[in-house]
Amino acid sequence: MTQISIFDYPIDEWTVKQFSANGFCCDKARIALEEKFIKLTSVTDEYNRQSVSFQLSKKDSVHRWLKYKEGFSADLVMKLLKEMGIKEGDTVLDPFMGSGTTSLVCKFNNINSIGFDILPMTKISIKAKDAIMDYDIEELNRMYDAFVNSSTPKNYKGKFNYISITDSAFPDETEKDVVYYTEWINKSDYSKISKNLFVLCIINSLESISYTRKDGQYLAWDSRSRKIIEANKARAARGAKPIDRLNKGDIPTFHTALEYELQNVITDIKSLQNEGDIGNGKIHYEEGSSLLNLPKLDSQIIEGVVTSPPYCNRYDYTRTYALEMNYLGLSSAEITKLRQSLVSCTVENKSKIDFLKEYYASIGKAEDYNRILNIYRSIDALNETREALQIRQDNGEINNKGVLRMVDGYFTDLTFIYAEIYRLLKDGGSIAVVNDNVRYAGEVIPVDFISSEIAEKIGFKVKKIYTLKQKKGNSSQQMAKYGRVALRKSITIWQK
Image (cartoon, helix red, strand yellow):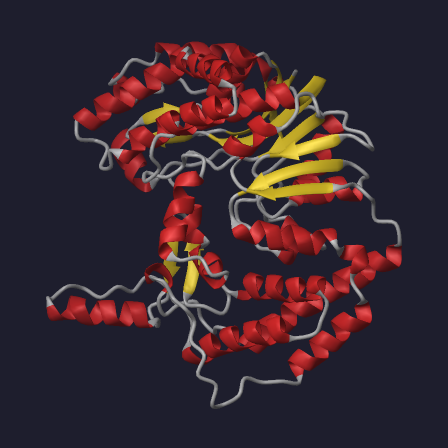
């Protein structure tokens, strides 16, 4: 991979001069951190916002089987594996597995992988992708033909078991189709892996056939949905303006969407099976939180890590993927519980400090807990950030006190995860982390450099920090009040 020198671009454009808008709060520690790590930072056009997002994977065979907005591309993973010197037979970890891009790239390159994720779609996705060479093409064709030549009985009365956040997500006929064909595939005599693949295709179709669209922190709703229609009736009764935010245009039928998905996956499987040897890396996946699973693994068992943790941006994955989780049978209470298991990235996340203390004590690692917590508390720039946010909140500039708790919890959780990764890595092993810097109430939080400082305190050597040429923007509200500050999107590489 070609490294781009910071002198190829005016690095000043990517350097934050003032972390606190209008000098309102102290930012000396953040400035000092900026001066320290900017020396290791390269502005690169080798990576771009497509490669560090899911955009390229939409076109990649197999990786497109599960639409996952927060994922990164196979091309990025391949470049980072090469950058870190990962070779055949090595083992790579992704503690935030998502759609499984890291593990699948590893599999194709005879590299073993370990992964964790709390979202239930990941399990279905990994099972489907790991079985590429095991599918019976004749069976898949029979399943496809049977589906194409069937229809939901006219007198079918099945209902989707909506929860409040997903209520009325589908047009009426689509709702019946989703329920009927889920029953249809579950009652069929097809193999388990073919049934799983069919369900994955349904999951990958849900957004397109619904009145919903994933939109940052929430689900956006089409104005034609019953939810919005009823809300607008209530608004009209009290003289309020109607909600008119989204029209998705023509919404495909269930059959149209699922035929498209099935055609794609069957074509991909045929092509890969015809190639023969696609790689035999072993994928070890467990559903659950990395905070709980990493401490239970043996030390020095991996050579590398490629991951992208949830960003510190208030996005709630349990809301944006609520329809998929509801389809898989999760109740509102179960989704709420799952939300608290996330790395703290939403304003609703509660502190995990007491929980982690009890958990580490229960597995005989109380000393590790104290050591890791002390590392977290020793980061001057982080302490300064927390103080600045508290000042902004006291001044009435933060409209949700959960922001402070989220930022505190976010770096707490990641400190524990990075400390465990250090223990799991063999000497000389590396970790690559994709992340975004953020800004709240005029206070810039340099996530890339704070995380690198945490990594150094843990014991890592910060090798490189790649920053994308394309800078991240600010919200219109922040720019109007505090002015614009370019925020970096970075890939940090640390070595044990």
